[in-house]
Image 1 (tube, rainbow, N blue to C red):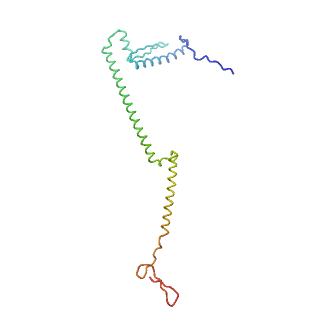
Image 2 (image 1 turned 180 degrees about the horizontal axis):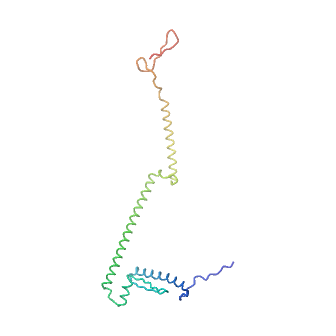
Image 3 (image 1 turned 135 degrees about the vertical axis):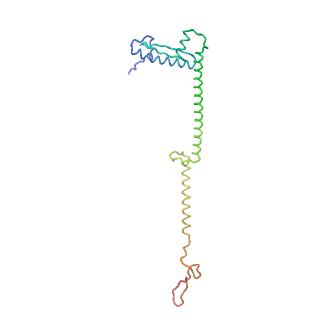
Amino acid sequence: MKRKSSSGRQKIPIEKIPKKSHLQVTFSKRRSGLFKKASELCTLCGVEIAIIVFSPADKAFSFGHPEVESIIDCYQTRNSSLDSSSHQLVEAHRNANIRNLNMQLTQIINQLEMEKRQGEELDRAWKARQRQYWWEIPVNQLGLHHLQHLMFSMDDLKKNVAKYATQMFMDHTSIPPPITGLGPTGFGPPQIFADANSSAFSFRY
């Protein structure tokens, strides 16, 4: 089957959009992009910008840094002196905000570094505990080396228990029988005496 050839990306002609619904959607998207680029330019280069755009419905939208009014005033009055009191106030306010943001950023970075170090210390402590008390770890989490070591240890334990049990059994069976009576002197087992007139034996205590 013959593959349909693709024309690739086509360049959109720069001309007014005839359809009103498409016109409004395009305006909203491009306006947001324009204001975003202006904000990035202010942040990166420290410039002052004022933008005023009108929608197809003649609705005004503006963006200004630090303020639209102050920039328009400077432009209209052609005030070349940027050291006026109002400009100095705006500049001081902006610098204060920048310093405050930098301080907050520094605090956040320091906190992240401290938490990172604490996390590394906890991780090292946990690994050290695992190496020292590895038998407390669940069996399904042990590696091959520890499993073999555990198997050999349990085998040795089984042998030691069997040996100890055998020794206890031997010690128990070798105990002499208890004394059930006393002799004439009050100590020792009963003595056996034979009767001269008969073959019977008698016991004296």
